Image 1 (cartoon, helix red, strand yellow):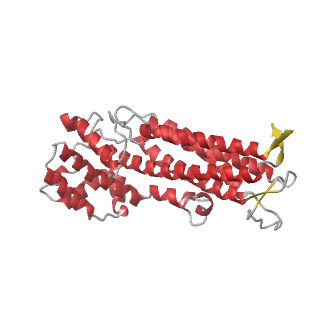
Image 2 (tube, helix red, strand yellow):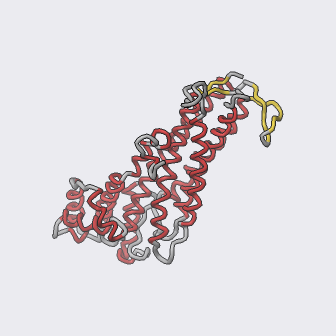
Image 3 (cartoon, one colour):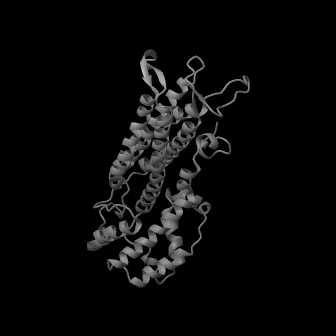
Length: 351
């Protein structure tokens, strides 16, 4: 066992996802936060809130800046967030003439939440691409093997005959719906965050809307008419989507594990898991892992729903809970899509 199964030296091969996990590294987070500050300055200069030369100086200084995430450990332990120390360093890098224009009108949550939105958007693109690949793989399987006859089972009891195509259709259809959900939820979830101290953008004055919209456009995020500092339904919705994807793939895994039982023998998994005690066994490892990941994401979703309760205009407690839960859910969903693709390719039907 490990406290970090997703990037553990050997458990990561079973449960991790390097491509999705890269989105949640400290280096990736820090790089996006620095980008936020540069683009915020550009949007504020465009709106006339800071001088154009200040935005140019900020962009130049931050483009060459090299920061080590480990250097912020003590500051985060002290402040609870990275941003106060980050802003101090960015202002020092920009210099005294234009340093005060860095982070103007923003608050720590604006930086951290916008970084999260950009990285979640990247992770969602990976997952959507894999959903397309899974649908194509299932279509290929149905075309090649779908006419095979199986015994249907209801409530774990033998029922009427079905075809393999019928069972595959039950795996495929939810994935199509998840793709449609992803496209529909994107503008609601992947929004810019800019609210200032208490979420009302008061520090930006009459330029608030122009700055927020300009920042969104520059970052490739949806515009947000107001800050969502304590309106976390978008975070919960994305978590629910992850749990739905993982859950549907868990259903596939459960079916395959049952079909691969010796006494059923409807499918064999090529390259399946070996046993230290019984060399003749072929354990349905990938199928089991899909079930595990489905149950894991469903369990964590409850915690993410608890994080909907933010007190007043900002909550440190609920916000930190999101940081602990959401990345695990997204990486687990990535691992589920990766595992499902490998599992489908390994199925060998002989009924």
